[in-house]
Structure formats: C-alpha cells, structure tokens
Length: 284
Image (tube, rainbow, N blue to C red; front, top):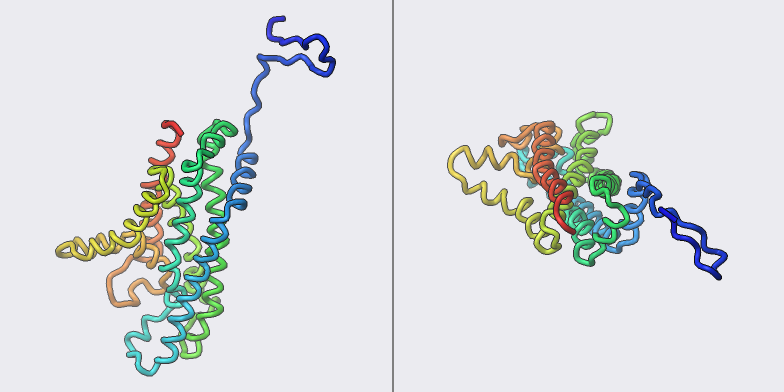
C-alpha cells in the first residue's frame, strides 16, 4: 500500500490515488487567462477606464474649443506652441485615473484576501506577477490608443482650421499620439507597483498622487538650476515631453521625447523592481 490510498469497501467508484504523483505546474497562459478574467469581472476596471476616457478627451475638446473661439486674442508666440501635445492635453488630467486602475488591480486582492487564493492557485509568484503586469499593460495600451485618437478626431479640428499642422503623415505627430498610450501604461504600472509595495488602496493612491502632482510642485521651489533640472524628469513632465512634436517648442528647457520616455521608464522600474522582489519574499 506504499504510496496508495486504497478504495474503501462499499465505494466501488473510488479509484486509487497516488499520493506521490507530481503536481502539474500552472502555465503562464493559464495565469494570463485568470488575470484577464479577473480584470474583466471587476467593475472598477470598466469605470476607471471610462472616466479616464471622458476626462482626457472631454478636457482636450473643451480646451480646443475655447482656444479656437478666442484665436484672435492669442499671441503669435503662444500659437506657435500648439502642436499635437495641445490636442491631447486632457490626458494630464485623466492619467491619474489610469494610475488608480493599476493600484486597484493589486490592492483590492489584498483588501479582500483574494491574493491568498491567487497564490494558492498559482504558487509561482514570478509567473503571477508577470501575468498581472502583462494584462494591465495590454488593457491600458488599448485604452490609451482609444483616448489618443479620440482626442485627435474630436479636438484636432479646432486647431487644424487655424493652420496648425496635425497631419498624421508627419511622423512626429503620429509618434505623439502613440506616446499617449505609452505614458498612460507606464503610470498604470507605477500604480501597480505601489499597490504591491503598500498593499492598501488609499495609501497607494495617495502615494501616486504625490508622485504625479506633488513632486513637481516641490521641485519648483528648489533653488537655482537644481529645481529646473529635477522638474524636467518628474513623471508628469517626462510624460509631457514624450507627446511634444518639438522638444523646445514652449521656449523652456524640456527633455526630448526619447529622454522623456527613458526618464519615465526609470521611474517605473524604480518602483516595479522592488515591488517584484517584495512580492516574491513576503507573506500575502
């Protein structure tokens, strides 16, 4: 009987069970399917993405309409600053909502105790972490593309009728729209990382607000050129640089689109790497 539990008498349908049989490893595809099912079934996913869409596109359209109506009162130097980044200006307001989605993807599981269930089903923590990160990335990229091109279609005409070049045949303009999706995705991943690090929705969202909105304010008060140099690389300004078609179009020193992307990528890695390490080594 070594390694076997024999069927009890009177239970003809009970088959012998091999206690020493190897446990089948859960595949990455199964982890992905599980995370997709979870993110689709949670109401907060739909509402946060919808709010981000409405806020981002709505504010872009509103600003475009006001500028168009008051075009004659805008100075020539100010008009020269209008590029594709002006068309998607509302994303600066909607980005926080996308970051909150990243937080909730993790923090709600900790808050409800579902993380223990997830780790029981998927004991390989690295696989679960990568699957969750990949699903969030895919969802936000799609949402970001919708936001970018909806802003272009609805807010763009307010600028093009006054001669602003927004043709997608110009690579810089297309690149600026694609950068919207990248910006939103990296901020969402920062939110995800904070969710893992703090494991509490309110704390993680507060930290995200600090990173996106408070740090730029603080850097403005730093003396000399230090404040200006640091201010350029904070997440919101690095993301803004990604969406500009001309690096210095505003007349103030800014990062190039590539440098902005690198700076934002570093911010994301600084939060995501320790989040991964802690997730693998501490209790749920």
